[in-house]
Length: 166
Figure 1 (cartoon, one colour):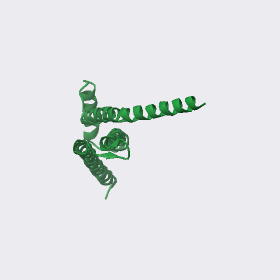
Figure 2 (figure 1 turned 120 degrees about the vertical axis):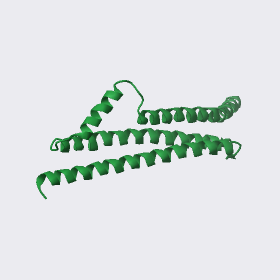
Figure 3 (figure 1 turned 60 degrees about the horizontal axis):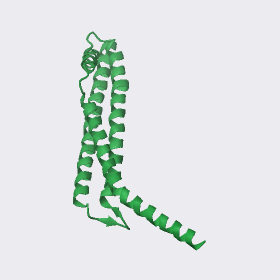
Figure 4 (figure 1 turned 180 degrees about the vertical axis):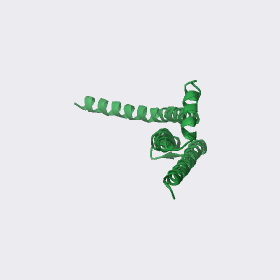
């Protein structure tokens, strides 16, 4: 195998790895989307369930929802970074040794497309993660407010008792 064939084989291997990595990214995003939907359904179907004193299943699931959305955001961001830096840069460097540079041209096209301020798929995923986190945070605040009000009322009563007894 001569040098050109070796470079081309390395190029093919790396592009296959990039495709496999992107497929894993889609599977991961599917997991987060399914988790997101399952948490919403769990909140709907367990809304009346109460643990301990006033901790509801909705409160617990809203905390899980916030965590899932935060992890989803970070995951989308890290996959994009890895794809851009690790795979794209390396593939572009290998393409410098090849007569044709399809990924370099593709990347230029994507950059031109992004400059038109059009949402990319990863931007949509991040947007859904942010909206989901805001939704779960609103539910969390709605559920935690009565608990905090009860605790503050008990604390005020305790302070009143302590002050009255002195």
